[in-house]
Image (cartoon, rainbow, N blue to C red; front, side, top):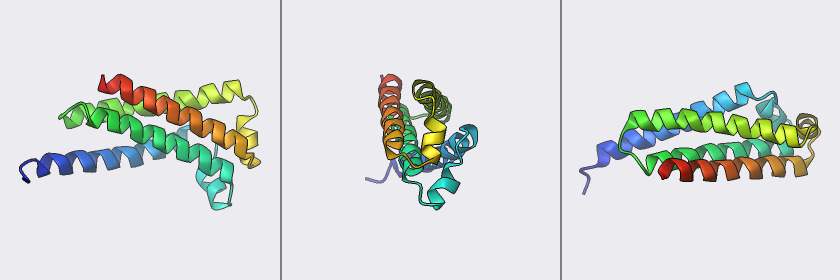
Amino acid sequence: MFANFGLYAAFLGTSLALLLSATAAYVMITPLQEVRLIRGGNRAAALSLGGAVIGLALTVFGVASSTFVVLELLAWGAAGVAMQVAAYVVVSLVLPDYRRQIESDQVSYGIAGAAFSIAVGILNAGAIAG
């Protein structure tokens, strides 16, 4: 029953580490100061970052469900981070005031950013899982 526990633990640990490091990378790469804004009660920033984290988690899920190789999980996870940053760039181009509106706590912008990040995460997961 527990024969695969080691692989499970390795994948779960790697997945969690990848999610945390990917989230940290996303926060450092994007120009918003999401954590500072969230600590200040900014709901739009919380929605936007929350959507990005869900998108990243979906990408990691897609990889983890289609491989038994931890290095593949890491490599495709890095690709997922790149796609989430690309999603941020696209949203910023479609909604030119995105950064300012998030900083001003315009919840509708946070929802739009979150929705797009989650959609990219779903597509990413599907493309990776095959």
